[in-house]
Length: 469
Image (cartoon, one colour):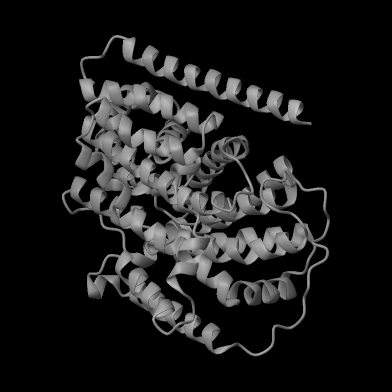
């Protein structure tokens, strides 16, 4: 037995070494390629580092958190960023918000609200996997058009964890059923973030860039935005469910062994946590009035949970998946470096002109794919901020509607291909029910098909409502 274990460990060590050497060789290869004139030396080194890091993440040669820390160290080692600028994004407002949102999930689970939510969800949707998953996908997408997609994800993910644990399906055991649900929840949530201006920061940012580009001539209001974008969310919701159902259909027809006993009256701590949640949502919606960053109400919420003794902060820290938070920090740091080093602009200036003269469908799809590609490696707001100043002038030269291009950006940057691409996927990954490889196998076709759905939708629907003539 000891000999078998020794052979297994030796094989694992050999696999790690081979994958690490391949990752290093790929980075060196990119670094040795001739540097284009419109690419800075820092940008060239960043693309080499990015190649190495992404391969390590995808191959999972070493733990994903270790690779995340290596990404920060690599930025310093290759003189792409100073030590301060390389590590600062790990504690950026967006990353700290994700940290606190994941803490919300721990709180929901510990005080019993997650179980209560699951009880009412199963009572309404039933335990049939097909019906439950379809209702869940549509529900996550629609609610994410109003609430932050990370909030919806953390609520639903932590509601489902006890269900699968009670069925004996623990993380790392390779069960397809929990993998199906824990991929469906974040992808459905992310697919709805563009539906209204409340769904994410990329939405108002796209309108702001469009307005500046047009010299204030083009303005899109709150309700007009909903008419233009929200109906497409229904299609992305159903498409997301259909794609996962086809690619990852679980053999189980029904959730079995689930205890559906009425949880009874809410306890004091459940009421307390729920009230804090409601107040937090109100503060988020009042952000334009208060001027507070969304991380501020989240921090107050953590205080509201812990101060009355409903849950201890030590319990939150003990149950918190720290690796996932570090990975998201690395993603933000690499995204900031793509902007600062000029690597992102180089990619845009190199790839987007290839669409010139192509049929309108190819142009829309190509712009959308580029947005998804960028969003897979940086925040979707950063991707919008990077691509629109380059795409809008190009669209004008191609006699395209600038409104259509601007509105395409927040839509397509909602679809990502890497776990690090957005908070919902990081939150779901933190459960341990799927690997990076599992995610990519589903996320890449999901992204490509949803880009197709959106491209066809806007080419048919937007002219019907008079948005694009």
